[in-house]
Length: 282
Ligand SMILES: C[S@@+](CC[C@H](N)C(=O)[O-])C[C@H]1O[C@@H](n2cnc3c(N)ncnc32)[C@H](O)[C@@H]1O
Image 1: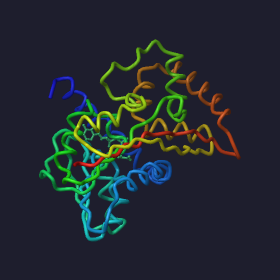
Image 2 (image 1 turned 120 degrees about the vertical axis):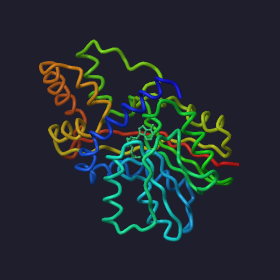
Image 3 (image 1 turned 45 degrees about the horizontal axis):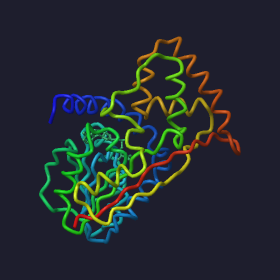
Image 4 (image 1 turned 45 degrees about the vertical axis):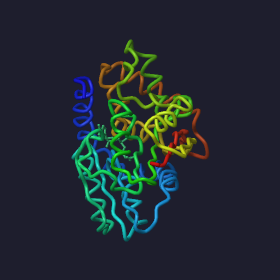
């Protein structure tokens, strides 16, 4: 692993440990918002009651914890680089009375798990934050049994994701910040159509499919939207952290104004679109 990859991984561990409190606070909202993406991955995984399941970059536990309830005679291993995020997942597993789960703090590119030991592997919004796709996907392939399903969600194009591009675009308008360098974490870095399915095929997977899934981020007020975004969206918060107080206030007020365009039926509804990719280890 290169020095750049090591430093991205170290930064991600620190950032996500800091954001774990926000993800715990907004857990119910995150579950509802991301639910359709988790459901799409679970559908692609074709689970059965005895399935052994791996969730890579599981964060505060999804879709692994939802899958655990669907495999009562199987088990789920939830992994993440951030011990803080996984601690939240562990507390949720206890609260739900799940007995068939275990947790491993580890890098997606170095899974401390046996070869060919899982029937299904998930990765929901993890690839966006890894140094690269290849090393993590190779580990998912290695730990999957022949015939296992590997399925992932990554964010779609900026235009299909105003929930984030609204703030990021306003931030870019008010600052001289350069766009993040290629090969660094970002919400839209894998949004090109066909890119994920090509990566899956190149990794040796067969029966590869790619489709889009969408839902809305719904917030009752601009204040609640801002509070949510600055407490859960690491890339947005990182951009805002590079601005001074005055610029931040300007950005906030512009964002509030732009949110007016997204008000329907008394709430702010922001489209959120992901690419769902799936394949089988032959
Ligand atoms: C957007 S969260 C997704 C969490 C969960 N899968 C979900 O969809 O709710 C991204 C997660 O990727 C994890 N992550 C970032 N880099 C990682 C790496 N190199 N290896 C493993 N996990 C990583 C973060 O700690 C964070 O929990």
